[in-house]
Image (cartoon, rainbow, N blue to C red; front, side, top):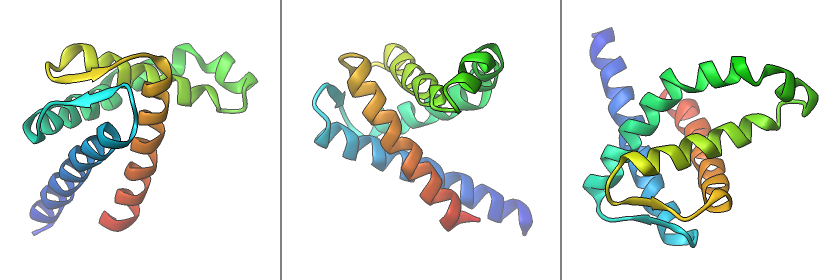
Length: 118
C-alpha cells in the first residue's frame, strides 16, 4: 500500500508540474509549450535534470551560493529550465529571463505540491 501511495504522489507531482508548465507558457512571454504531451515530457525531463544534474551543479557552485546567501540556486534552476528546453522538442524558452521566471514559478509549484502530497 505504501508503494501505491508513493507512486500516486509521484504521478500527482508530475501532472501538476506539466500543468504548471502550461500555465507558465500562457503567462510568461518567451516560453512556449506546444501541447499537453510536450508539457508531460518536459516535466519528466525537468524532474530528471533536477534529480541528477542539479546536485552536481550545487556542489560545483557552492562558494558562489554561499557568497550570495543561496540566491545563486535560482540561477541554477533557471539554467536547468533553459537546458531542458533545448532537449524537448516543442518546449521553447527564448532566453535567460523567461527561464528565470519560469523556474521561479516551477519552484513555487513544487513547494506547494510537496506540502499537498506529503
